[in-house]
Amino acid sequence: MSEKPRTEPARGMRDFLPEDIRRREHVIGVIKRVYERYGFEPLETPAVENIETLLGKYGEEGNQLIFKILMRGEHEATGKADLALRYDLTVPLARVLAHHQAKLPRLFKRYQIQPVWRADRPARGRFREFYQCDVDTCGSASPVVEAELCAAVSDVLTELGFNDFVIRINHRELLSALLLAADIAPEHQAQVLVTLDKLDKVGPGGVTKELTERGVGVESQDRLLAWLDAAAKLRLRPNDELDALEFCASYGNGRAALDNLRAIVQLTAAGSAAGKISVDPSLARGLSYYTGAIMEINVPDLAGSLGGGGRYDNLVGMFLGQSIPACGFSLGLERILVVMGERNMFPPSLATTPADVMVSAFDASGMAAAMTLAGQLRAAGLRVLVYPDPDKIGKQIKYADGRGIPFVALLGENEIKDGTVTVKNLAEQTQTTYGQSEAGPKILEDLKHRG
Image (tube, rainbow, N blue to C red; front, side, top):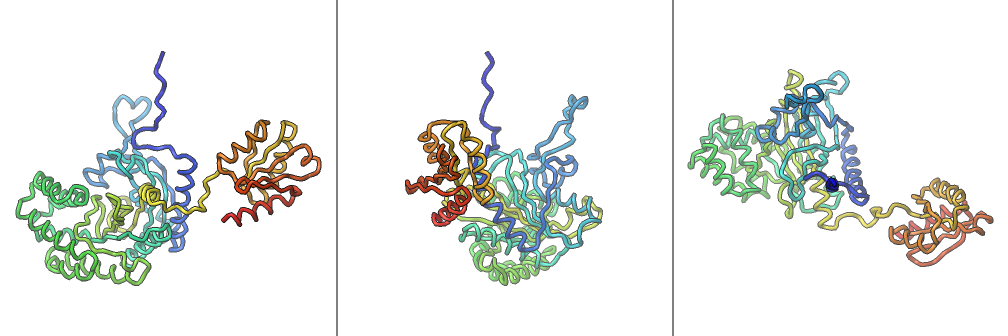
């Protein structure tokens, strides 16, 4: 006898049961409303991209996490891949901008909420299939773009009930200047940035070990980590921290980076993210396509971030052949849900039952009347479940109570003959008989009183 097929989903993937879906839709609904208040428009792209669209956009480590799709049919035996599941929503956006340039405005503000896939090691709040909630502005190099993105994601988290988050911000060119000041050659900087991005996860010891493996000298390591440690002590005072980094202005594009960061911090102070910004020179963001300001949101009890992003002015040019300034932020839906669940942050009013009222008939002859009544109750704005089997009424009521359905509409022989319905309030253990046309408004009124 063959073994039974496994019932659990693939590692790093999940099934979403009704309560999970309600919570996800609650968070997504808040995100959509906030993003649309800022003038962002919705966009969707395919789950599968041509593999050459994705390769080379995320750096060496990112390339290794792309889920590749083998060629099919007669080409299957080659073992080659021509397609891949999308790794993020930013590279597909850059492709869309290049492909649909004639249809899109010069200043294009979009949000996109869809799943992405990464062949990563699953951990708490980290999955192989997960949703990203992206918001991007394309067509402007103004620091107003970064300030508005910070305000928008701040509004999202505040509306969801977070009050202890910090938006860490840095600049790729400032990091490059810092590395030059530490005598780290430009050709080694991309790999060093990938290592620095792990500082929160592996600590200074882990970073030192990896920098040594990458050939960075001890003196350069010590100088770099000392600067980052000193700057970290000023994190809650962005202007002081930027002053402390003035020495970077004489290296590479350090002066322009410092000026740009100052402008973003000042503009952010005028919006709803005021007081939430923390300049953090250790913030690296591992993706190789970032060119300017980079951002990340953290809360105290989560290893990793609730989201991040930055400016990527050269990415669209890889597809279009001309540079288009762009900047975006991505909220991690899964991590937000994990933290909200652990903190009991979901509103009590969030629906946890499949229906407001269940319609019960005493026997099979009453099912047509039950269907008619259910239609009237739905037209009144109620969520209605019709119990389909002619079980004993006690069993039917027990089912409704077990599912948390607050009302049961009972249709016996007398109710059907008289055009009435007896509505049982399970919480208060009371029942009232109404005319069928007035039952819907009465139940709605009782639901409002329940809060």
